[in-house]
Length: 209
Image (cartoon, rainbow, N blue to C red; front, top):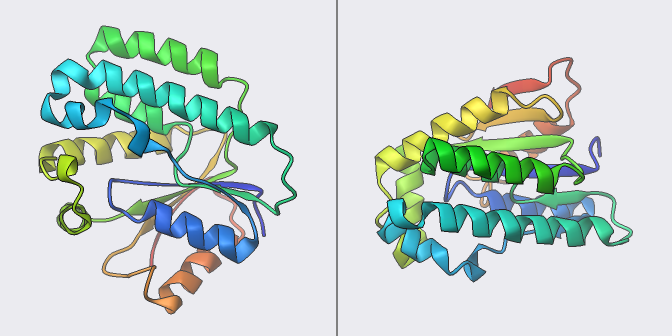
């Protein structure tokens, strides 16, 4: 195992949690899953994004901070830690949803709160085209997600790419899943493992399964 802390990223429905579970199981690692179901502002945000954007982003900022703070204080004898989100996720979503003055305040709070938390050594970003993302959102059936528009998803995707390109303290692996199914195709999963473990002189890699 090349890394001790890996974060999985991607758009809604990209398969982050599923992959994080499989990797943690494969490596006998500690699994960290985002606790988004406990966020009371999320359904309201999808109904009225302009009204609830700052509230939902601030609540996620606090939730993620408290969760990652607890994790870093635990002494669990695991080979590695695998999370289904990264620290920078808060900045990505805030940059896509907040107006400039709110984002400036949010960024200050982010840097104050997260400055002392460990950074993942590798971020694996799962890229899917928007048609597949929207289909996965439809299939998993969360009612408050069904009204998410393609324009919002495209904006998030662009902000993710910009954020990852600027990541200086963490290696990044962008994986285009194309039509591959990491859950049901063991060959695709093995290819992903090879990509993660492959030595590289570059901090930013792009690959297709």
